[in-house]
Image (cartoon, rainbow, N blue to C red; front, top):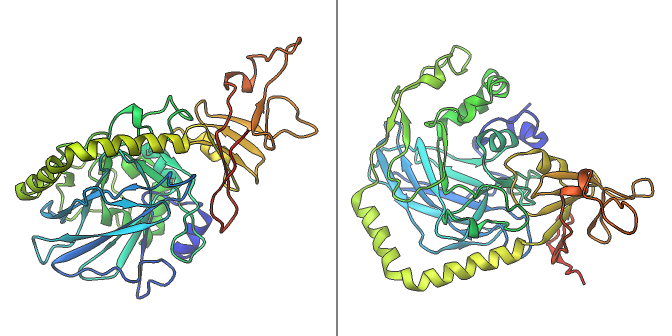
Length: 403
């Protein structure tokens, strides 16, 4: 089975699934992504998963390092925005014309959280590769994720999107109110690009990662989520160059114990320029950031999304993050704050269920019109959704306020 065929079934995907492009970029939407020895291009796509611009946000900052941890370049588009379902390409001027990216760091900017659906990196000496998050990675690594309708190019592949947020404060939760007891999205992440590419070429390696998911993000030089990236100017890199693998391409038994060290630091002129940009605009952007954060909370607070994708997957994942969801296919509702899964109401099920027409939970009654606080629905507070997102395949979101 080809990698794209495997990706389309979702089953068996491990790690930061990466799509290499051999001779053609047809269908992936990255045909125009090119790099030279002096400039490396990185493309980010935001998920499409809510009302308005719920999953859009500031374009992330990105840094690149080579195999030995040598610093290649950094790009910081201060205040540039990606609409949900949209994309932006960053052009990174490299310091070493012969450098090939091996490690990448992605950091959220300011308080406008973004849910990243995919990112692509074009190598100076080859075709671009695209990276998407798959289910096992987000669960194993604890990355907050949400359902997304955004497809990869013209292919019918819809990866989950993952949240990153530069505020580090609970008041800017990406879906405040619907999931108030969850951790904030991380500030960003770093990863070893080519380590994940090995998955594409080795069936044995894919099986090993499936059987031992701790190999996905158990070593911080391979993948690390950062709760705070303020002042972060290095990333972990492997000390062994190149890494030694087993004869079948699998990680060796001592993989998790392999030594690592910190990469070369971001150059002072880059850091100073970014700081100067922030200082010049702090007063104006502080007000703007607060406004953006409040708008994002308003978009997702008290929101119900109704679509074909799985409510059970959201409720069964410890790291799912976003507004409540009702699945047409499963006839189930996920209350995200408590991760409670309820069946849809029907002629047979009239209590402890979700009424998809009235958009409300039917609690159990204990007599005299009193609602019981027992059973599955007991922990779910009575709530009125301010926004209802009706999602049909290949259509935009429609807004149906209640009342």
